[in-house]
Image (cartoon, rainbow, N blue to C red; front, side):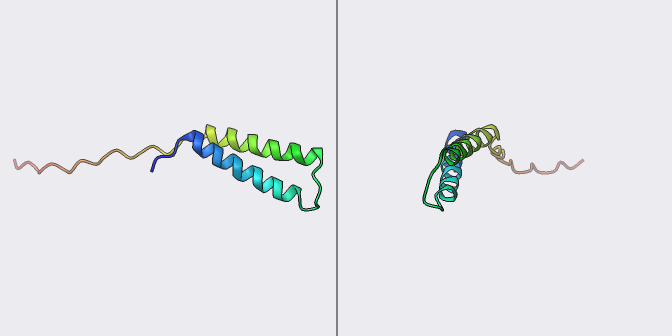
Length: 70
């Protein structure tokens, strides 16, 4: 299954943003500093995840040829 870098970064941003939002709303209020933290978590996850390249697909292995007899 191939996942594009953009899809990876979107999922990472949603995960980081929701984790920060859950932590920020534990006291029942959401102040400006907490909103900034949520936004920075999303932007940081997007940037870092998008910058890291996907693992390259391994090349198809070719069967070894028959040994030559000298």
